[in-house]
Amino acid sequence: MDLAQRFNSELPGINQMLKELKTQEALIKVQGLIPAERPAFDVSSPKAMGQSLNNAQGLMYLYRLNANVASEAGQWEKALEIQEKRAQAARAILGDLEKAQAPIAAQWKKVTQESSDFVAKNEPRKQELEAKIAAFKAELEEIKASKKKLSKKEVEEFNARGAQVQLDDQELAQIAAALPIHKQNLTNAPKVTKTLGENRKEVEGMIKAADEAVAKAKQAVIDQNDEITAFNTKQVMQKVKIVGKKNWVDAVLRTPENITKLGTPQNQAAFLNRMLVLDPGNAGAQKALDNLKAGKEAFVKEAKPAKKGSSKKK
Image 1: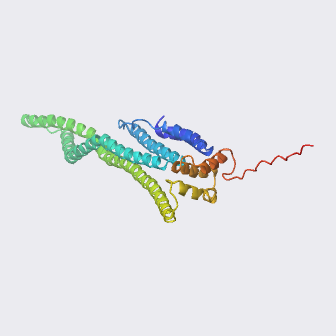
Image 2: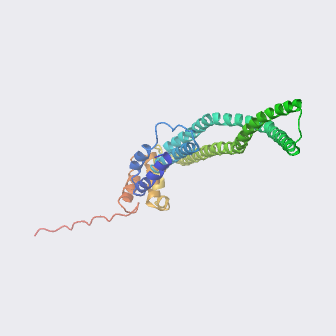
């Protein structure tokens, strides 16, 4: 099973874990899917090359999934690290690809040159030999038809030419056999070049996607840090004691709509997980998350237990 197949096989189960708010289990699961070393490129055949590209793309999918799950677990910084590893791996894959394709490109460059030279030289030679052999055969038929008696010298000269024509015929046969092969090489060469270019383009696409994911993950962390810093600055000006990021988290949680507007329990849980990363042990965030895991609304109001009536002693 290649890595793309592994991704496709495992994705439904991981998505189900996330839907059931089993984020930590999903994170452990997806981390175990990424191989310790990136797969090597096999260029022994077009099929093997396709398999290698599938593996490379599968590795990118697994990194992306790992980052997404880490993000849902509230670990945005970890998600950023994973995306950076993804980008590094994509660049390493391009290096692997270029190293694997370089001998193929060099070989086909040589083949193209040799076949071009062969066709350029032997296409005219083929026509020349065909004309020469045809002329000799026509002359032979003419002699036979005229029943002209040749002198001894003419016979010797004609036989010598005949011997040369036999050699010419052998050369023509060799050229005729080789020309289609060389012409096919010239037909195939651009196809090979195109395939090699498409392979490179595919991996460059992996790099571009990874770089964009890094930028997005980095910006999310920066934007949130900036928001917290701005909030804390205002709090300091109001003489409020700042306790890390707790003040901001508490302020966010005081307005339940900040969480409920996110829609699905999965989205709300992901945000609450982030709150718990920013302020570990935050009681409000933990309670809301526990409610979601219990199938309740995040900020459901629990009914207070009724007070027991006091009975007077008689």
